[in-house]
Image (tube, rainbow, N blue to C red; front, side, top):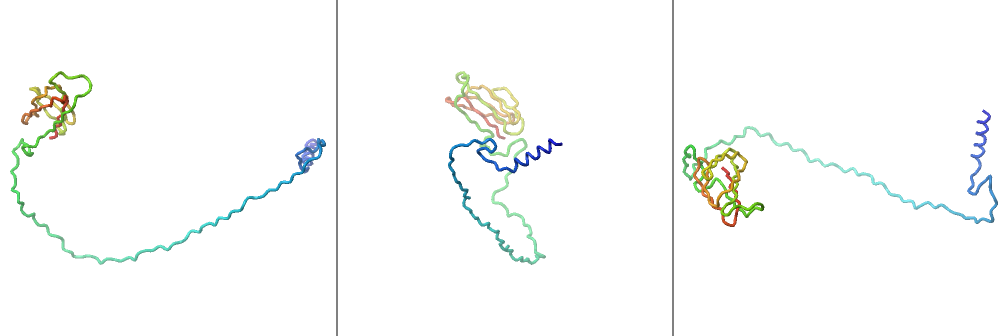
Length: 187
């Protein structure tokens, strides 16, 4: 207990003594010292006013009530006037309603594809089924089934005959400058 009391007294005495930068208890005398004075100047004070929000009036347009509409007669439907074009007969069953000169396919030919060269007089032909139903193709005397949305690529001569089973035969001619072709069957 004595030791604790003695420690507190020493700390109290040392805590009240002003601190010096050049030592206090074990100080040696050093020649004349130069006295320097320094001042602390606070920076400039800037005052920024705080903007107060303005309360703007809210303009509300006056409410105008419309008169109620009652007992308004509705329009009476009438038949369409007769057309100037005579009615066309319906196509016979199993035939198409398309015009006779409108093809049901498109043929696009293209330049040589890089890779293995084809023999002279031959070309690569891709048939694409864009009809939405399975088709049976007759190409060079052979029948092939083509599912919807799929293609079939064959190596054929530059002039060949083909058809969709149930339709007339089509003659295809691929120009000599081209070695590839695509036939898109749309309907």
